[in-house]
Image (tube, rainbow, N blue to C red):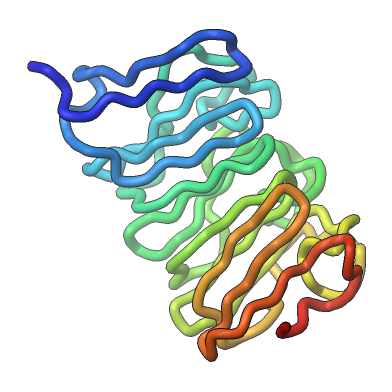
Length: 208
């Protein structure tokens, strides 16, 4: 049976990859790309990962890079993924966050700086959207509360400091949407205003 959608990726592993019919035969549900690794979610909620894996960002309990996709197990039904520079986030259908990979700068959010070779569930619940920067992470809850954590030397967390946060910290309420760049974050509030946190401002994220 021919696949209904093909995905081609060229990355640091130096070759093109095609996800074929043995992986799925429907459309992608979600996808994310990091500096050297890729994540996809199938319609059934399964996560597949491939690429660079020196920081355990593939979540397969190894640090061996992969040229072909491999399943990331242990998370249930996933609805969204976000790939940071060397860490990965997944959001499941119950509103729970799973994280794995490079944690040297606190991007996993478990209160430590120890890399995670397998997905681990974070304490945050009722989450509706996730975002990952190079070394920081963001999570938006259904009530509009926004939590941030990870590297903060460029003030990307919007907290008004440059202090690294190894656990999720409440940044603000009344948030409608989020996005994370390599070293900055963009926030859209429910009143339609937006703000950006980055090294240019080095202050708390304020509405512009």
